[in-house]
Each structure stands twice: as structure tokens, then as C-alpha cells.
Image (cartoon, rainbow, N blue to C red; front, side):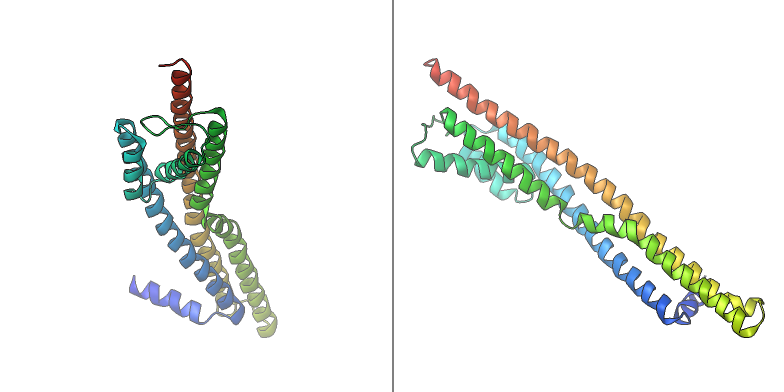
Length: 236
């Protein structure tokens, strides 16, 4: 195993300048992709975990101020962030005299509902955008790395043909270096692309699930407000 590793290292060190440049480019893509994968995995996992805690506690809370205090403690919760934004807007509307509030601090009035609806929609979009940050690089790496590796492959094969033309012979000693460069570039390109594509698809699916959860929470929150308006309108 050590001899194989040493042989691969020797092939890389003996590669031509262009193939080395290709390999360095792929190395950059690999390091960046794995950094993003680790960061995003931790962020999305914690966001989902804290959102579950917040939602469970939200429905048990007697008033919105308690839920607001909890949301500040759960800083990674996507639902908590959207709720804080809506709660802040609710307070602004209350301070501006748009509608009235009941004992749990819910804004009253159609204008207030429209403002809260827009705030929830905007906050959801901002949170999804935040979670999607950096993930497009994974898609870029997954789609371009094989072609970068292929460029190194073509270049290595070209070197092999040049060696044959120069030596006037097609024996193994002549073609082996160029073929080795080609195979290494191909392998490294695939090693970068495969985990990047898998990670991008995984994160995209997870973020779509979080977006659905945010939309469901927003709808539930608006239903609470509308029920309160109907209750107050009936004089209850």
C-alpha cells in the first residue's frame, strides 16, 4: 500500500506543468467543497433540531413574548428566526397604532394581517436564501470538475503521442508517463465531482423540507391571528 501511494506521488510530481495546474485546480475545488459540506451539514442539522424544539415549545407557550424569548436562545432555528421577524413587525404595528392587541400580543385588524403576511413571506425567503449560500459552489464543482479532469486527460494523452513522435517508438516506457498523467487527472476529477453532487442534492432536499416547514408555520401563525380577529369581531 505504501509503495502504491509512493508511486502515485511520483507520478504526480513527474507530471507536466499543465497537468500539475489541473491537479492544483481540482485540489482547490476539493478542499473548498469539503469545507462547505462540513459547515452546511452542521448548520442545517442544528437548524432542524432547534426548530423542532422551538415549534414544540411555541404551541405550549401561553403568550408570544415567552416564545420570543425562547427563539432568541435557539439562534440556529430557522422557524425561530422567521417568528422573531414577524414578532418584531407585530410590535411595530402595535406601537404605530395599527389595530389593537389582546392579552397574548396578537395584532388585530386586516391591515396588520397583510403586513404580517408580507413579513413572514420575506423572512422565509431570506432564511432559505441564507441556507442556500455556498451550496451553488458544490453544483459548480460537481459539473465542472470532470471536465477539468478530462482536460488533464487529453493533455496527458497528447504528451504520450508527442513522446511517440519524438522517440519514434510506441513502447511502454514512452507512453506510460503521459497515460499516467491522464488517468490521475481523470480519477481526481471524479473524486471531486461525486461527493460534491451528492452533497448538493442532499442539502437541496433538506433546505426544501425546511422551506415547507417555514411555510407551514407561517400559515399556522396567520391562522392564530385571523381566529383572534374573528373572536374579537364577535365580541368574545
